[in-house]
Length: 107
Image 1 (cartoon, rainbow, N blue to C red):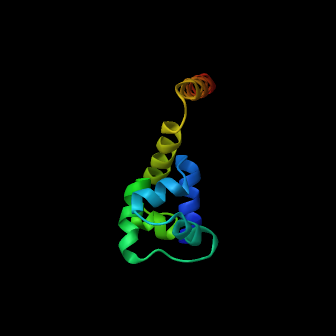
Image 2 (tube, rainbow, N blue to C red):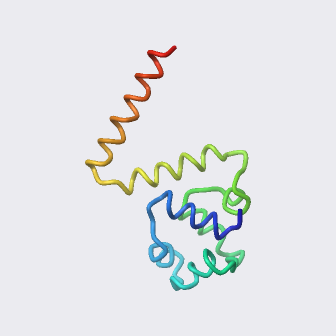
């Protein structure tokens, strides 16, 4: 997976936009779009700020997985959860509780 694909995946999973990322990095949205759509690569000095924005490791951002891949997945899920409205959060929590109850009864 390319770094552009990783950035796009992180944006989708966190519910954040290219515009929000551009503001965070103090760059143009066209720069972000170039990374995602045109195969351009962020400069080395952008890697750690990107990781901070998405709360993922550099290895995850650059390679797609690392020894903390589960942590990165959790971070992305938390980002998605934070993007939900309070009503949507209640629905998600309810569904997770149902899933746990089903799992407990099955064992």
